[in-house]
Image (tube, rainbow, N blue to C red):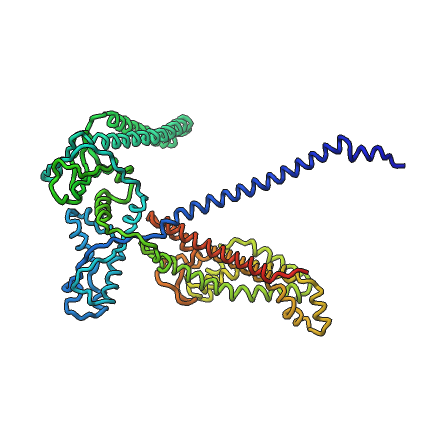
Length: 592
């Protein structure tokens, strides 16, 4: 006989309540773990996208400098032929340099001229040549032409090289021109504020030197222990040499820190400004001066841009200090003055960077675009699809509907699953040794990349296609065969159309994975520098992920923004392809 009292206690007693409470707490913890996991994943995604998109914004605009230039007939087309070929061969680069020198005649040394020429892009003269060759009537005229700015100019205007900080002034400026420099004085010692900022920079340099000395001191401790632990003379001598070198480096850094501290703490002491100090620039009467020696009451400066008139007891002047020394930035003090002069004249224009989306690759960041890589990706994906899709689908149909179940088919299925987990670079090695080395497929061509990516994508398509075919109810097959259809007709007329949404979904996901692959394409040479836009599957080309890889390795800082913009473009392609897979699944989904 069942003890009903015991059963009642089991389900409604104190022990039962405790078990229910523990179960609910466990469920609550599981939910919290899930919410926390989603939050962390979302935070990581937001951090990634904000970082990439924030950097990519710099590539969406480009800068032009509008300057007057005379298209001299004697240099461009001396025989007045109006032949575009002759015009394009003219020295437009020299013409551009002469125009810049006429704008800023103070640039006389070789270094200053090189900095001046770097205001405009190296491709700007070629664009000017193209414009004049298309309109020969411009020869002999003076036109206002928009020169594409260099990456240095563009980055400075976007604030990538630090800020030019204006210092408050109260007095009036007077200037006296000497043989090689100017002596500038203010009526109320306005230079003291700029001097304080310079000394503040010296304090920062002293702290940096002490941090480096601390690192060297760690090395001293390490090599001192090595000397004490050495068991033979050679090891002891090597450790002793390293020890002496670290001691000398530490002492030198400490001495530099003390010297910098002494200069920083000297309130009224004059400072000679070099490229390791914060720069002090003065704008007066439309001219620019670079301070080379600064005191609270006097500034000795070099003329960068000549003033338009005398500077005597003038209140029309500005005092600027850079937050970075000249040695720590790509743009020089001279270039800052020239750019600010052009900007004040209204000759600087910033527009949307269509070039980035319509041009091919270039070694100059301001000329580089992703269109060549995008077209290369298109041709590569086209070859990949037309090879991987039919082969993968037919293989899946055969294995799922017609292949006998024996050891051979089991062996094939196991290897297909294994191939899906093989690193992609292995397929690149296969393509390099077989398709390029044996069959002579063109190197760096979309056909080579497409074949390699098709091999890599095949296992994914086969597995997804088999799962989609297997999901079709057996009753569909039985009904078709019962009405007189053959096995082949049942598969191709009924099973395959119903399985096609799943097949297409797997195919698009596999193609999206192939679109983002870099390693196998690098192995077959698609990392080459390709400027031209490919027009077919046999032309040399690059692809978007390889373009990202190449740009990320370039030293020019402007390529950082273009790398991020290329990543955003690649992510957009991947999102579109995955969204297409979702739409196809929703559109053709069948429920049984």
